[in-house]
Image (cartoon, rainbow, N blue to C red):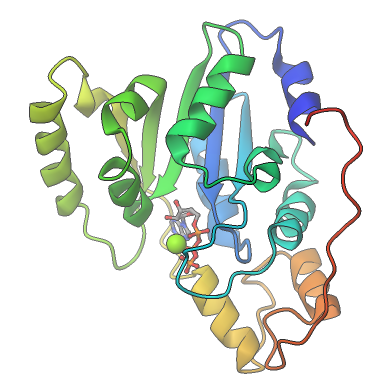
Length: 237
Ligand code: ATP
Ligand code: MG
């Protein structure tokens, strides 16, 4: 679903509880879906919007084109009526920070909407130590899903620091830890397995595995020649 469609569907929902799941999704895997589904249930969300990152220049490694990552997220979430995917970051030319995305969503949803930004324990640390943490915590509640290999004690250190730096914000109330069944799966691991010719069946949704195989992305030979999908014709700009 594109931004316009999503917003149209939710525009009139009073007290909307909107989950936002940001990430590179290079590629999407089942732990992303488990985290989103758990947040949906625990925080009684109406909808979780997946927000694949655009083509950011300085990721430090080659990233599959945004259009392809978007496509994988779209097919992976298609059969869940409470999941949708936004083109907002994919369509932006400039670098997009979480705070920009949340400002955008706040501007197109009803004023009494509550936003919940869903992340893994690793990403919440990065996001909240990066751009404009005070504003981020005003815009959304952060849900940090437990993730194998990431120590949550670092998070409490950051939270006390933020409390000192942003005294007006109820930091502790704005960052919630969510226990999810531990899944030691990452996109890096999926990419490495694909590059090594190992199976990723059951680590990613079946349709995602099929599209990856069909595209040749992440395989040993990187000369896949994916030209992107036709540009969306909706007037969202
Ligand atoms: P990469 O290895 O390329 O960093 P990733 O698996 O971390 O990929 P991202 O696209 O970076 O995937 O993550 C999107 C969001 O999903 C982040 O908030 C991340 O912390 C969370 N996430 C990813 N995998 C897990 C997992 N196994 N358990 C909990 N959260 C996860
Ligand atoms: Mg990651």
